View 1 (cartoon, rainbow, N blue to C red):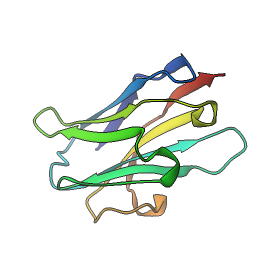
View 2 (spheres, rainbow, N blue to C red):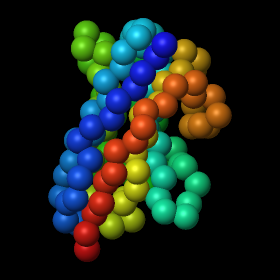
View 3 (cartoon, one colour):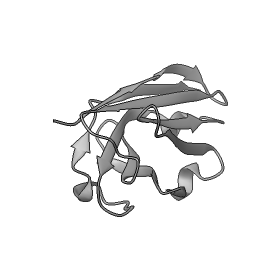
Length: 121
C-alpha cells in the first residue's frame, strides 16, 4: 500500500513563500514520477509541477516562482513556492506514478490528502 502525506501548507501574505513537503511510504519512487496538483474552490484539480529523473516541468502560471525537488534517500518531494499570489490559493496535492512524467492527473496512481495554501492580498 502506497501512502503520500503532504505538509507545509498555511496562510501567507502575497509575495511570501511556503515550502510544501510530501512524504511517500510503502514503496520508493526514486525512478518514478512525482507531481503536484492544486484545486481551488469551485474549480477542477489542475497540474502544477512534475519531476522525473531530474527533469522538471511546470504549468506556465508558476514558472519562475515554484520549484519541485526530491530527496530519494528520504522518499520526500518538495514544492518551494515563492512570490505567492492570491490566485495560488488552493488545496495542494502530491501525486505519484511509476509511468513517465505527465501533466494529466488521470495517469497518477497515488494521491495524498492535500494541504491548504491560502494567500492573502
